[in-house]
Amino acid sequence: MPRIDDFLLAMVDKGGSDLHLCSELPPKIRVHGDLEPLDEPPIPPDEMERILHEICPDEKWAWYQENRDQDFAYEIRNVARFRVNFMYNHFGPGAVMRIIPTKILTLEDLHLPPVLTQVCEYPAGLVLVTGPTGSGKSTTLAAMMDYINTKYHKHIITIEDPIEFVHRNKESIIVQREVGSDTTSFAAALRGAMRADPDIILVGEMRDLETISLALSCAAMGLLVFGTLHTNNAPKTVDRIIDAFPADEQPQIRAMLAQSLRAVISQLLCRTADGKGRVATHEILLHHEALGSTIREGMISNIRSIIEQSAGRGMKSMDSDLMRLLDEGRITGYEAFMKASNKQEFEKFLTKEDHNRINE
Image 1 (cartoon, rainbow, N blue to C red):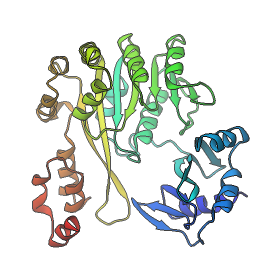
Image 2: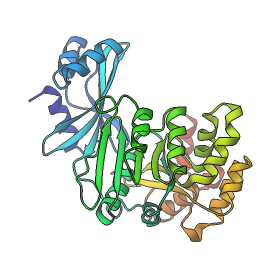
Image 3: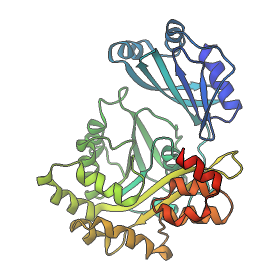
Image 4: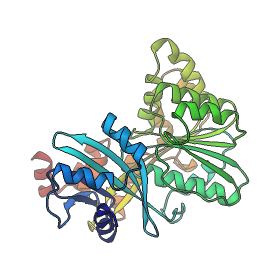
């Protein structure tokens, strides 16, 4: 058994989410948002290299040696899959491995907002799931794809780097393509997907101008396109897409986005009040008759008003959802304050100890 499996099994046993390996340090795992060391000695660089090489295919190892970075998926049978990133740092080789549960959880299992089922039923348009790294975007998207796969006869193409959740075909046909192994880039795969008669395309990460442009084009062509961005709320998401383009192209992009954007689901993970887990909080922007003109005219700040005035349609702001979790006793005032946009609204819930932590 590869040495790294010992670390991964220990992480799974402790309910951890990520394994961090850094030369000259003991392995550490992230549990409920905090890093803690495993009961292991520091790993010198030469031993770290052997540990990493043991689970890496030869062609990917050659790329890692040349480029100093590598991404792929690794699986311990009957336990879990892991998203792997190999890198080098000042101390030598290292890695971060994130657990991908073998079982795809449903929208109900994850206690996601019920309105997401309506989003899955849209016939066309652009749907964005956003949040920082480690906020559960991939888990949410997998649940949404599983909902569609269970209820509808669709042709779904996913483009990922690497493939995380492996879907089996139910009512739909799901074709999963991995950047590097099955295609050279997100953009190349998107161009190919346009010719493959899809109903739905999932873009694992809209990381560059060409990918964003092609995703918008697919949505404008009448496809339902799901994508992710590393933004914390709906207004920043719209700004991020528009700002990715040169100034002379932005009016056209605003027009395309105004026409195609159907939903932005922003997600953060909060530590629970008992410290034994994490709970998701969401901001949800849905299509609204005023949204198109707001985007076309560049009045992005008005998106906040659209959300706040449309709670009856299933929309909600991140701060209002944080307040709900706080009222239910599921998170602390400190956690709500740290995640909130309008911190003044949550300052009254801080204790003296919380103020000391913030000012340290």
